[in-house]
Length: 208
Length: 222
Image (cartoon, rainbow over all chains, first blue to last red; front, side, top):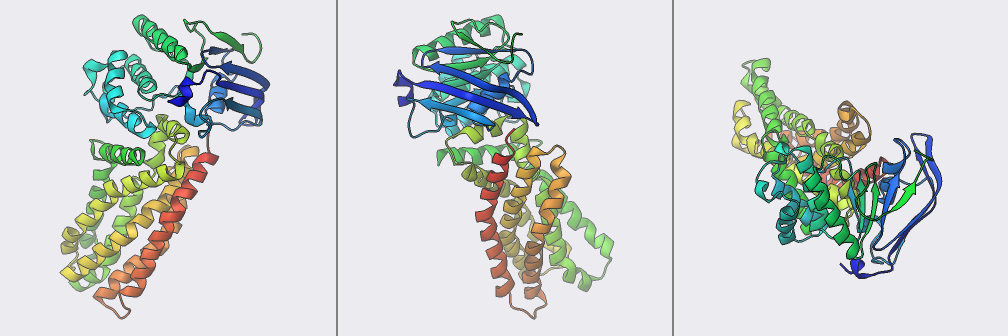
């Protein structure tokens, strides 16, 4: 929690090089983001937007350069302070909506009563006992968003977050992002569509 | 601790739901053992001599049957990314997943053993001995198998690879598990010696398995 209160938190990368499958995706990438700021990572397909998010999340090892966070919780590593919302929803089809969410709440260290509240926020409180197998793509995305609300992490790494969300869902999500930034959080989103909130653009891989 | 118990509860719950792995293992075990008397023929003495080996082979193959999905399912739906990023050490998360797999898929095999012992003309003492050796030995199968499961995550079609990687590691467990059971039935060696080695194998794999699996998962990050 304390990480959210520190206004000076800053995420920065210096000369980051990403190599996937022997091919250099991007190199010499500098970026920074301070608390309360959203960064929209843009670029054509294959320019390394997802790779950048996974580098920050510690799911890929940079081939060069450094990525560091200053002013966060000093006892935690960068990945431990991040939420990663990827293409895959991390949901188990055999478990119900509530079971899926309360597992992540327990495993990532959130509160169960937050889980019920965030299900209402994302508009899934009518389907808590439905197995996740029966959810539509948009509903799965909403359930993933509920995870971000149930467990507080200062850094949100979002990969195409608005995919499959309907118009009302996108409005809801814009509100959630604004709340997160107002609380001193930080958002890095890879996106093709406009995020809908004030954000700084980080273009990788040349002009689109 | 809540994180680990949550992981164990989730994995057991998934395994017990429709389509989960728990029942598949027991059914496979049942099939192998039930068919064996028909293949061997009506020689009761031979059947009871082969009994422990048949039960052990069945249990070994049944416990490997569902093991390749241990990390694969979490990898495919993105859960593994979040588990890797979390504040829980990956080694402990691996150990928790293996424990959950053993509770859901290994323990039912041991519970089924007394029933299957009847089919193989094993008396009470012999059946008890086999069940006891399975109880001591199947954790070793799960925890060494987990290393193969972790390696298989990074390679597509890893299932076959896993069998090739894991089976050699499980040979010592098979040898000493069957030896300890045979010792009770026919002698002449004591039960204690092979059983102690079996326990030692389990303890060693309990320590090495999670570290090796976590290392190969980290190495295979993609």
